[in-house]
Length: 260
Ligand SMILES: [Zn+2]
Image (cartoon, rainbow, N blue to C red):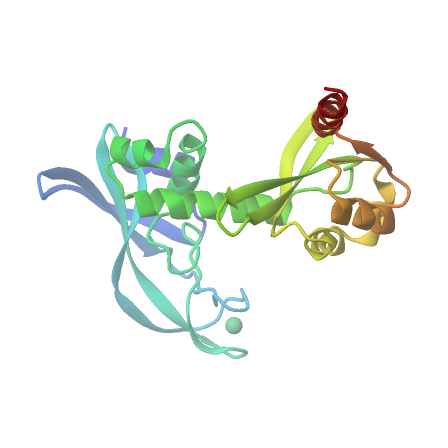
C-alpha cells in the first residue's frame, strides 16, 4: 500500500493532493518528505475571511511536521499560495492541516497534547525527538480549544480555594473548581485572593450561570464570603470542613491555653 493511500484515508483534504514521497537523512535522522499540491481547479481560501478567491502568487515551500511513522519523522512540503481577496486584499491562503503560522500540523499538535496528559512535557519531547517548546505549544492549543468549546451551562456546584505560590510577600492565586458529581475540573484562576479577584470570576461566568449555582464551597476567607453572598445569592455557601476544623482546633487550643 502506498503511503499516499494511507494519508488519503487518515488526512484527506478535498482541495489538495499528496504528491511525491521521499525518504531523506538529515543530521543522522530519517525523514519522510511528502509534497502537497493544490487539487486541479481548486481556489485558495483567504485566511482572513475564509472565502475562496483568485490566486495571486506562491510563497517559498514550507515544511509542516506530521505524526511520525515507525520512528521516522514526517514532513509535509507545501508552497502556500496568496489570494487576491476582493474583501481583504492580498492574503496568505488558509490550509486545513495547520493553524496560523504554526509549523506543526494540527493533527501532530493534538497527538503531542494527548500524550502530554500522560507523560511530562519533556518525556513527550524526548520520545518524539521534538522540542519542549513544540509540546508546550501543542498543549496551549489544546487548552485554548478546550476553553473555547467547554460547556459551562450545567455547573451547579463550585469550590473556591486560594493557594500561596510565594510565601515572601504573600502572593496568592484564587482557584475556582467545578465540583458537581461526575464533573470535577478547574474552571478559573485569578491573581490574588481579594474580593475583586473573585468578582472577576463571577463576571466572566455571567449572571445567568451564577443564578443556577446551588452550592458554593469556600473556606472562611471573608472577602470570598462577601462576594459569594453578593454574586450567587441563591447558592448555599458551604464552608469547607478542613478549614472549619482548623479554626475549631485553634479555638480549642486557645481555650486550653487559658485554662492551664
Ligand atoms: Zn478575505
